[in-house]
Length: 168
Image (cartoon, rainbow, N blue to C red; front, side, top):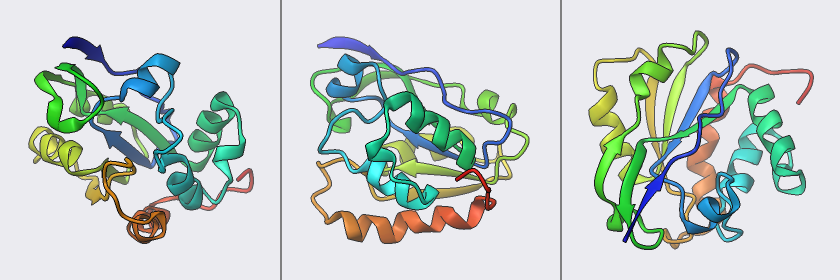
């Protein structure tokens, strides 16, 4: 089992929705990119929210499009021991400074947890430390064997927290 580390947050001063995963999986860590596993539905789900076909863009352009839509990304776990990619295999986690990051986001309206593991840890960390709405979304991971359309119904709630932007 090896120690895995999260990526830097993808945020700016326009971030209105912060989506928090648990910890990047093996494919993401190998690629150095959030949600690099092609079976993970994240880019399709967040693309529906942002009203952009993000899957067709380069990774750098995906991140730029998210920022333009007011969406940020990070992880609840800063580092942990984990064999494989499953959240259930996370051992000895050190959590990210979520409250510290949130304090730097003046437009933040909602924090959305991508799956149950991220929500359980993230809600403990943020309880009473933010006025942002906390939302638990179904995991975009293929480990949650539900249709993407079913997941998209829950993820659509994020649209209410974003401002319409002419560059989207």
